Length: 309
Length: 309
Image (cartoon, rainbow over all chains, first blue to last red; front, side, top):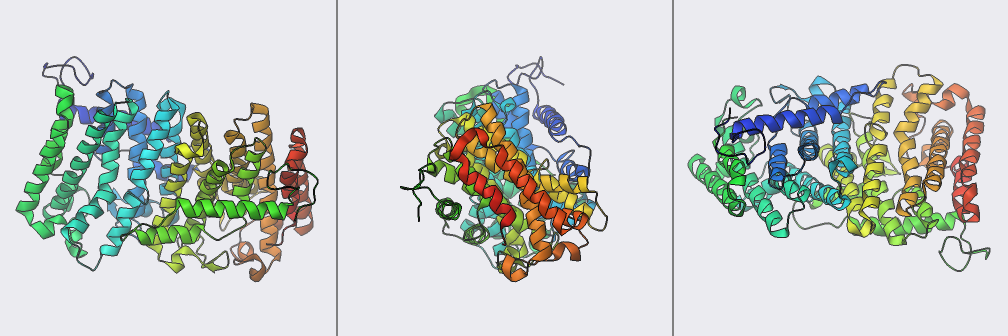
């Protein structure tokens, strides 16, 4: 389990490996999500069930891990960090629920199971996505997330900027408009930075906000998150181009079928792979000043470009 | 313009009438919304245009007026109050955009013009609703809204509770599930309290939060908002049952056509009217301790049950 080289992640008696640390973060964020989304009595129970269906038990929890591992650099209480991780995962989950709708990407499969609108219905899926977003901001602003209300406001503003029209929603708009026309490499990079990059970047920044980090350290985590997000997206496009649906847990080959340009279609497989590796190395480089405490975040950068699912 | 009985609203040299005060609040919140939703360059401009289409130039701004008039009881800076009014109107507008979608209520007409998904398209309407909700929380948490971060967090938590699964979204879920079966009077009251009541109640409470009001005064504004919201909903159902689409600015007779039970269908027109008037009087009664400073909020209670649009 542990190889005994240090205790920088605070998780036990030895140094955790990346897979161990990711499993532990996924477990802790799952517990937090379960606590934060209790099912009430009454007819609205169906809404909560859809919110839980869309959020619990799924994914690698990359974003939550980033927030929690970033927070651990500043010895932030793990329960507070898990709440922030849970809030970010709620926003990520809401975006997937809405993206999968027939009027959007029209996907029936997500994380290897039916999309929320297939498991429930379209109206419930729209509402569940809406209410997940609301709950995320509620959680961030509540006292239990941080004793300092300035930090809580920082988290709300940061997540909103990453998720809203200047971030994720804006990127999704660009993506919709891109169908049927060819984008330049620069346009693709900007689209992906908005659509998926901003939220990954904020996830890394959230650790610094929770830790009330000095501006330079916060800036380094932002830079790390930005490059990591860009590397992650190219890796995702490579998986879509190369992987099988069985491996990846969702439909693959979609980009090509939809005529969507990605950096992979512009650069080709080999150059896209090289670009992803370069971005991952650049991401890790931003962490130099944190020393070996940031080893797991460095390992993560290598992992996102090597993963097969 | 002014009848010279006092200066309690701070709007000029004389006492403002309710229509004057509502027009002034609507103007100020419109200016705030225009400032808070600037259209950028780039392909995502279409998203902002849809957000503005859904939000600007529409409605009586009842919720914003409640927040701003409540805040004026505590002499809150009007620009801060207008930001909060704008945030609440963004959430209200997002809920209308999503409610009007084909998978939800499937309404082509809203405030006398095509619904957002008719003027743009479904995908853009879903995204515009999403991004309006995000922007609302961002605005509340930003420094410009209040100098005290505890107040800003209070606003975020309060709006989220009113708008999320425990409020507006939960009420909409109940509403969807109610189609085709008959609800009891109690079930209808609960449904409407969640679907429209909570946000109106929060709008009144927001003034007290901005004013850092003592708990008793905050409680009185909450009670006022709760009863006002209930009166407003019955009045809305009466308009649906009695009004013409031309007068009301949206399709009428929908509830009966959809087989939706309302208090009007259970109580009949006359008893429903009496119930609305009773609730409005009860709402006004909660304001006694504020003296004549709260005259406009009292007038508003009478107005919501007498309005014809």
